[in-house]
Image 1 (spheres, rainbow, N blue to C red):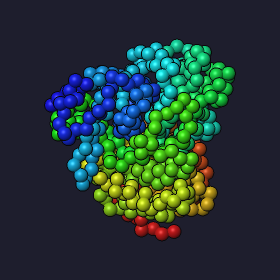
Image 2 (tube, rainbow, N blue to C red):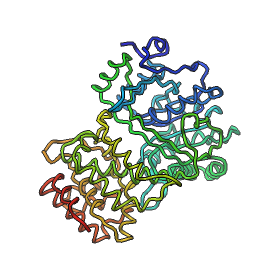
Image 3 (cartoon, helix red, strand yellow):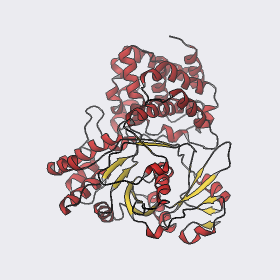
Image 4 (tube, rainbow, N blue to C red):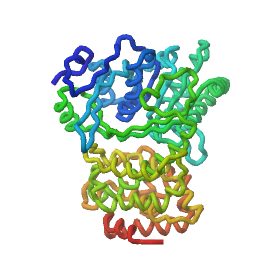
Length: 494
């Protein structure tokens, strides 16, 4: 296999699409925090498409990694050796694989190794957009009050001065430098799966800035921009054996290879304070109805992902398409859409939610993606609130059926035990569940999951109807397992 770097690009075969623009002429106008798989197969590909058009030479990407440790340093080294190039392979069940080399990222900074380099890049006049994929739970918003949390150790550290540790510490410190230098602020563009992700970014940035310097916060509010957006594409983790299989097949030795499904969607509000690339050239939709697109995607697609992943894991599946092969899992999703949530979601004008959910079934069932259920399930304490919280609230307020939402929470409680119904252990990832919550969960109270801090805003304990439905599902899961409990749930009618 050929190594992947600038000097080998011309040597790849016809099955690999290469960038044909001159990367030596590019300048980074975008700094992106969180260069994970999703960013690399979504926003970066859209920017890559723009770079093929004249006049976009100033819109390349500088990636920033915030986490430390061996894996983070290995990734930074791989980008350096590969001249920040990487491959993206689209995986489908009905078409040959399609691979492209993405050249949109021209620099990558590992923040713990050189925080000043990150601050300097952010403060540079060339930087006009700072984009984020820091996960749904990464915005440090208190669910109960809706305010930015100032009491976490890393935020307290950043407010005290010194090299930042958090994305908000970096952004606000750089904005302070720009203000002092007479430069305008950059646009902060969230690309995370959050309702009103731009408004959430604004809340976090200005909340941090106000604690540091009220005058700076006022300047950001008056001059900055935080567009809301909707992003959608499945980007599975790429285990080492899968990376080797894919790179061997394409003949390119890429140490940070990414994969994705063919489907992609990006809808953005056209609110940028320092200019933007012509993203329409990459199929990006600019719309004033972003919240409606977000509601459809989050409450119908992301919510369905969360609903199917926990029972599928408990039944023994480890990949999303394996879970979809249990006939009762698609039935569960259809019941959720038709009986619980579709009537509660107002789509954009002329938009068919039925067509959308039919596509969701097809996407989830694609066996070529090999999307890991544990990836979907991870950080469920945050994701369940984001994607199911509003639906649960509306069902509680309107006297709707609670069985499927209660089943979700009961399956989540069983998932936290880290063992499926066959006794096979799996690793869980729940960074938002703190020590006090874990002590509560291990205390023997069957309702403990409803009381964890992340779920406080849902008020589940206060609903006797929800508690009854939850205990019914939890008892059935313990007694007969997820498969039988799900079948029983689907047979019930209210």
